[in-house]
Amino acid sequence: MADYALFIGWGPVVHGREELSLRVFQETVEYWGHAQERGQIDGFEPFLLEPHGGELEGFMLIYGERARLDHLRESEEFERLMTRAGAVVEHLGVVTAYAQQALGRLMGQFQEMAGELAGAAH
Figure: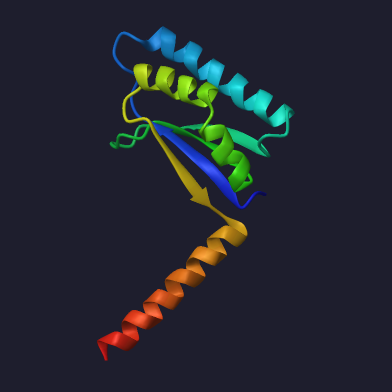
């Protein structure tokens, strides 16, 4: 498993754009499938959530190396896809996620900072 992922989350479908949202979702799955075939990402997983009273209705995790994910995220094709998605769903967001060694590195930084703050409080 990769040390990084993109978390792409979305909320409810914009009323009246249900059919278009299905086409955009299919385009998105095809985009990530091709990216995986080309070796640009390690893999991806789409998720839909059951009703829970919150605004998040689904998300995708796109796994890969940070530099490759950043490169894809800066591409015109990705921007176009996110523009289309943003037109059919509410609360679209893209966030970098940390796992494995990257998570360990961040937790180490947090632990160091927490120790410094605890020392400063005394």
